[in-house]
Length: 331
Ligand SMILES: NC(=O)c1ccc[n+]([C@@H]2O[C@H](COP(=O)([O-])OP(=O)(O)OC[C@H]3O[C@@H](n4cnc5c(N)ncnc54)[C@H](OP(=O)(O)O)[C@@H]3O)[C@@H](O)[C@H]2O)c1
Image 1 (cartoon, rainbow, N blue to C red):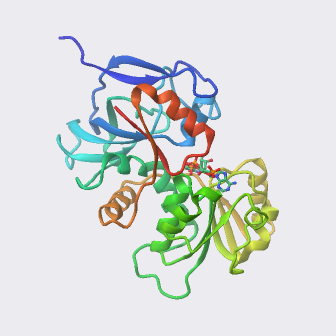
Image 2: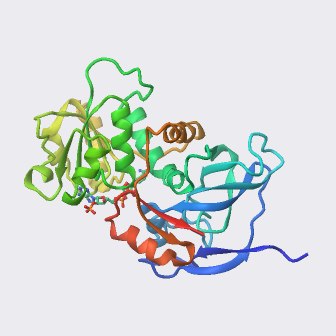
Image 3: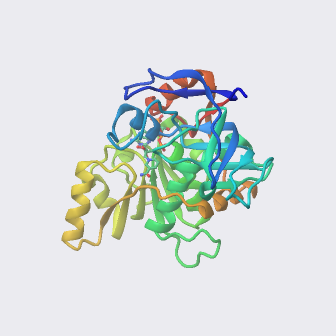
């Protein structure tokens, strides 16, 4: 019997920019024992997708070519492996795929059962597809690194949190989650997004192109207990005077100088710390985030939507670095 085919976007080797993507016909994958096969309804892009394509994680990622990029997908289960008991054909789900295997930009996608969460029908595929990498990162940074509790039982003085690049994929979730954790949120973004970020709950918003914004100075004079640092290129010397005595900068894109600062602060027992963070995705956290979305407590800002056949423009938009929220692809 002829194998079923589907469309997938893939590249044959490391290449810079948005070029080198091919919209090809390839066989539909089969789920292994602990995997599910999804009909993709929406996928979202993250900066990691173009960084991997460019070769920034070579020789480890991708693990082989041709490579179908994207880790974040929402869809409907069409088949399950023999070891999958809690998911069945017809379930609406959201999943995060492994960085090394990718596979998101395709009509059909295999996902591991341990990173596939059911979603209620009222959570749209596009909204859910925004969540995996960006919202899990925001969640981990706030709960594990900054110690913010999101269970609605926060007592005591609200923590002062700064979110840089609050209009981006990670930042817009971080603002909403920090507010659910009863924090006082200062955010930075471009002038065009100030009202939007306030509407997500930020208490004060700085235009990053002004002098006060570039200095990260809280308009109300607050010192930050934690910075969820989603922007890039801000030196420690800018953060330092704005931190509380035990303040932490959680750096999501740590470069060599951030790593040096991390080591130096540790070795000198500094109370102010820089913490490099990399997401460690967990199904229970994805389920928690989907639950918040169902309850209307968390939303995805959709910057733009593209058909899978035009993934090149979607990736170019991602590389440009000026998306407001998430870039979504649909079949
Ligand atoms: N460590 C991890 O596990 C992890 C996980 C996810 C993401 N990341 C990293 O985190 C970073 C953010 O990811 P993302 O998906 O949120 O990116 P993104 O969606 O591409 O961010 C774009 C947004 O950032 C804003 N922006 C850019 N520079 C800014 C600045 N200096 N100050 C304030 N706003 C600024 C832009 O606003 P304008 O358009 O107004 O300029 C735009 O709205 C990336 O470097 C990504 O690789 C790391």
